[in-house]
Image (cartoon, rainbow, N blue to C red; front, side, top):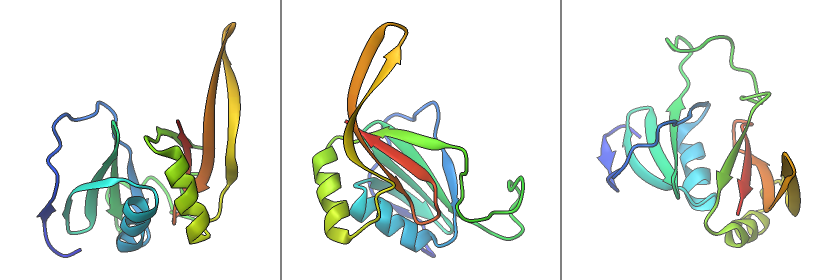
Length: 139
């Protein structure tokens, strides 16, 4: 990742885009694109912009003197947060994860969550990315 690369134009910017620090940007990009199914939109040295459906995502190579670090980065990164991401092909993702032997934090299952008196049912599975961020993929 030493050059700028633009692959797929972003046609509409999401109003909220998480930017996650990574220990190894190349490894994270491989997992996010090949295993999780994200589309790589563009890169520049130490940075990548991706999407999955309407979810948009940024990955950045962590630097020891990074200007935006609010504290020490300790694995697992992102403790206390999980990102719910609607996946357009949840069954295919599950199949890839199992075929790769990728560890599941929580297996594929159906959950029901209440919004007041209204029950919402979704299938979901949870994994940690290579840096430990917890991702909850739903359908």
